[in-house]
Image 1 (cartoon, rainbow, N blue to C red):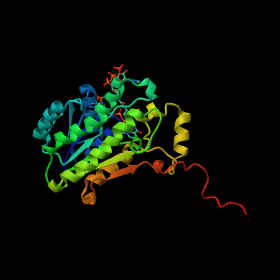
Image 2 (image 1 turned 120 degrees about the vertical axis):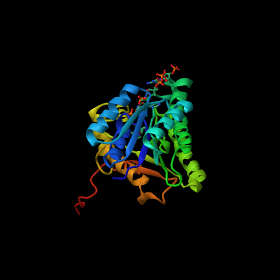
Image 3 (image 1 turned 180 degrees about the horizontal axis):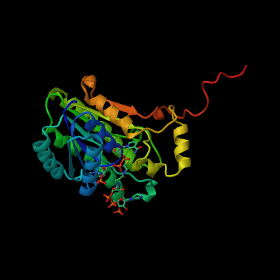
Image 4 (image 1 turned 30 degrees about the vertical axis):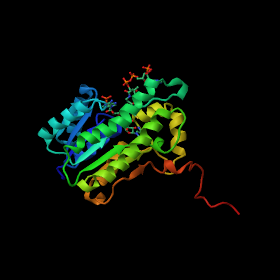
Length: 260
Ligand code: NAP
Ligand code: COA
């Protein structure tokens, strides 16, 4: 039982909800928030029911700095100062650039990139110093160009740089800043948008070295490790947690010796 306080933007569904459950299950107090307050309440109830943990639900749009600050102030009064802050909220849709308006591009950049900065900048004023761990949830698109994802590639590349620069600036205050780059995680909105059919999913996982999609629990374990004392000398890192997906196409049989 560690008893830390953990704030999680986007902790109300998918990967980030899995992260929230992971921390709550080890005895940490958790704030989960998204835009929709009802979704947040339902998520908090689900986490409490599964883990018996202390969970606060909130609502704030990560594009609205003042709203995040106000929520963090209330959550700090209720749960105590956070030592872990996860910036996980994001938005995505599949479209070639010719189908993306200036506002469509800006919307994703505002949620993913500005939103990550806003969450970290607001967190700076509340987190325990020294000792805090800030973690962004980035994506392979940050370093891997992908058609129909120009907006996400641009936004997540920016997220990786925010992580690295803040790691340099805030290390002297004892704050570590890292990112996790998940591969495809089964059962999530992100995967449903990018690989809607079973055929898409099978093709994708069969090309991955470990031959399977990840789970939210896989990403939770990475976040728990990064924020624990075991990760105390790690900062400015982008941790791939993707079953080897980013290595490239690993389909084929490489362990049956060839017949001579
Ligand atoms: P998801 O289930 O759609 O979760 C998105 C979360 O963000 C929800 O809690 C949502 O709540 C919140 N959110 C969205 N826009 C927001 C805003 N403007 N302000 C505040 N909260 C907002 O997504 P997911 O697929 O699990 O993805 C989670 C993270 O993992 C994202 O950063 C994504 O880029 C990354 N990722 C996912 C995959 C994958 O396989 N799914 C792979 C690589 C990286 P509301 O709707 O209530 O706002
Ligand atoms: N293709 C092209 N453009 C799209 C689009 C699509 N599939 N979906 C939205 N847009 C455009 C809209 O047309 C609009 O641009 P316009 O004003 O020029 O018409 C702009 O994006 C903003 O759309 P809006 O619906 O007002 O944005 P929002 O802030 O309500 O929602 C999204 C943000 C679009 C990212 C929405 O998909 C969302 O809320 N996503 C959160 C969940 C998610 O994406 N999960 C996966 C995480 S990886």
